[in-house]
Every structure is written in C-alpha cells, then in structure tokens.
Length: 154
Image 1 (cartoon, rainbow, N blue to C red):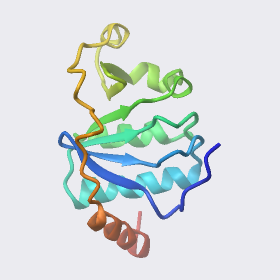
Image 2: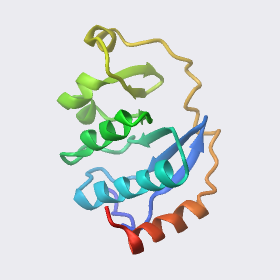
Image 3: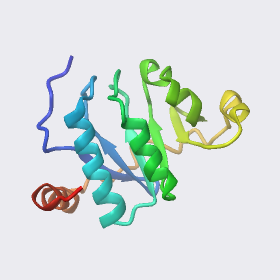
C-alpha cells in the first residue's frame, strides 16, 4: 500500500470544465480522508462556484460509509458528480451499482433515473477525461482549504 499523504493535502485541478479532486495513491480512505474531501468539495463548490466535480479514484479500493451519501447531497443541489477510474471494489458497492452510470473511458456519472440506463450504460466520447488536459495550478484552492480548517463551522 502506498504511504499516506499529508492529510492537509489534496490535489485539485481542472479538466474539461470540472474540478477534479485527487487524493493520490491512497488505497483505503478513512474518516479523515472523507473529511478532507468534504472540506475541499465545500471550497470548490460553495466558495469557487464549481458546478462539475470529479473524484479521481484509480487507486482507491475502499471508501468509508457516508462517501456516496455526501456526493449525493451535492448532486441534489445541482452539482454534476463524476468518478474517474473507480476500482472494481468500489464499482461493486451497492450504492455505486445503483446510482452511477458508466459513461465510457473509465468515467462514471452520478445518475438518478431508470435502472435500465445504468445496466446498459451510455456511450460517451472516449477522450473526455484525457489526463493530459489538466491545469494543476491549485494554489488558491489550497489557501482556501486552509481558511476552511481555520474557520470551519460545518
């Protein structure tokens, strides 16, 4: 298992109009990781006005309870939620099987609608989440996260 990153650090970058949150090579997320993701979602959605958010999950094998519910809360407020490259362990979780639609190229969209659409999947542009088109300039987002930790009331 990869060494745990500094718990104050999460990579945030923009890719095709979505803010991508990337915890790096952490395979098992715990409550502290969930809290960090929740805080950063607050920053990019409430403070920065992002309406599309993606979570990079190529290394993740386990997420804590509450992860999918947290994403659904933001989705319910009109935010488009995407999982990028989730591993089979995550894809086999009941919540993921029921509410995420495979959109092609290892992209899964949070979706509420007929279950038949989830079973069939929806064809998508295979180049949509090309990692070469990213902007890793996340300095001001890190500063905002520091503000959240110092002043958070959530």
